Length: 193
Length: 197
Image (tube, rainbow over all chains, first blue to last red; front, side):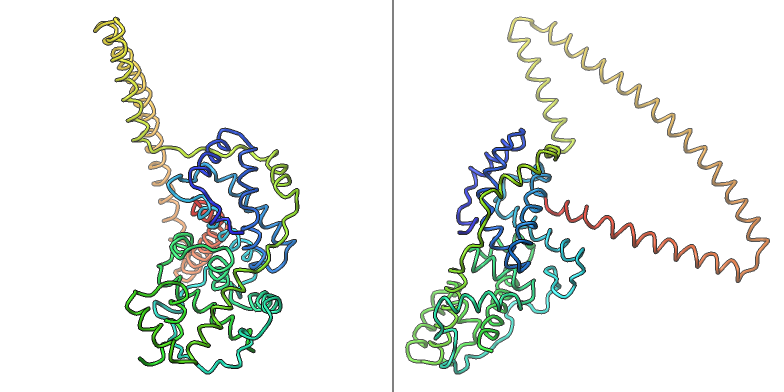
């Protein structure tokens, strides 16, 4: 399911080398390998499958055009996620959707809120059937600010590590962890509402 | 121990706690139903997110990307820094020279190669020298033009009052700022593409 879990550094590097020599089939292999995780990520970011397919296609085209700048000492998947994340910023800027910027400046630092455990015996997260919980989760995700949603999706849907997310976004590790925590608490509040 | 804040519970789920803290928290969870319930709810949220269904990728998605690549230029290869390229060139010359010596051409062959190399460098230096002369000439022309422009400016400022001068300067600054803003917006895409690297 996750492109990152599926990624293999030497294999990706070999594919990139072949694509740079003009072998478009090699790039097709790259697309096939990462199309599912990209769509899972971008679909949750733009909220609509058809739109997400268009955006995914543009991301792969941008990746192809920039392939010569890929540095093989880094994971290809992280490089691709960075291109996708930057593409989304441009995409929303063009659409003039300013309310949910994913390059939003920090509103918090390491540590975050120190919320204490409350009485959660009636929590719907615990009592709902998994199928219904997933449906509600998709709806709640759409309400989470994009800069938090992106990290939540990367971490818990795409299965990226915190270190990879920090590298992609160029953020301190603590900030990434704190934002994922914020996203989870926000999601839980939305599900309980 | 007191009930932890939610961040610690989250860290426990993400395996982000030091071993000692983890043990202490697990001991607390064993005797605190409230914290255990809160932890279970967050664990379930994570499990639900991890089991969200894949969005369906059309079977021809990769083919459609490839079709659009047909009209796209091949990706440009990354250029190595000048120093690296010079080092490679120098190494190559040394290797070729050594090979000639070893192959029986002996020292004369190596010297001939050396002479040819220096001849090329001399030609390049001559071209560079001519280029510099052109640059100096262009600099002189620019200086001459600037002094004439300055004289014209002085004549104009002597003809108009200080208020009009201030208005003209103000308008020029505004135009420059607006131009700069437009250029910055246009270049943002290029900057982002560069960041992708």
